[in-house]
Amino acid sequence: MNLTYFQELASYNRWANHIVSSWLGKLTEEQWKETVISSFNSVEATTLHVIGAEKIWLERLQLMPHTQWLPSYFKGNCAEALELWQIASDGFETYVQQLKSEDLDAPLHYTRLNGESYTQPVYKVLAHVFNHSTYHRGQLVTQLRQLGFEDITSTDLTTFYNLKF
Image (cartoon, rainbow, N blue to C red):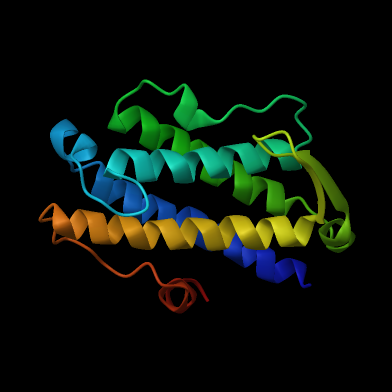
């Protein structure tokens, strides 16, 4: 695996999350919580899932001994959630930018929320996280359209590459 590729994906993830966050920041609290079925039942639940996943994977990669699942305890509003998403996205980009090529193959030992223990190389975890976030950003686009939101632009990887490189 190529370190530059994962550094680009981390930058892309931060960029795309920022765009989606700018859309979500325009929602009313009612729209944020409104039932809009996808994998999760609202924009709020979908967004908290993505933020929670990025946050917990970053904590695992940073070898934090105790991690908590954000959706199980978060009681804040949309703006507070989006602030946490920015912190997680920035943290991921910083983490990946500081890696060395050999770090990609290093084993990461972690425990899932259900108590099961796993080991995977860092590059597989990074690939999963960036793919997972992309998948759910797509769901957020669908949910936003169902809420009547029309100010949606491209967050495709190729759009990012055309803007940045």
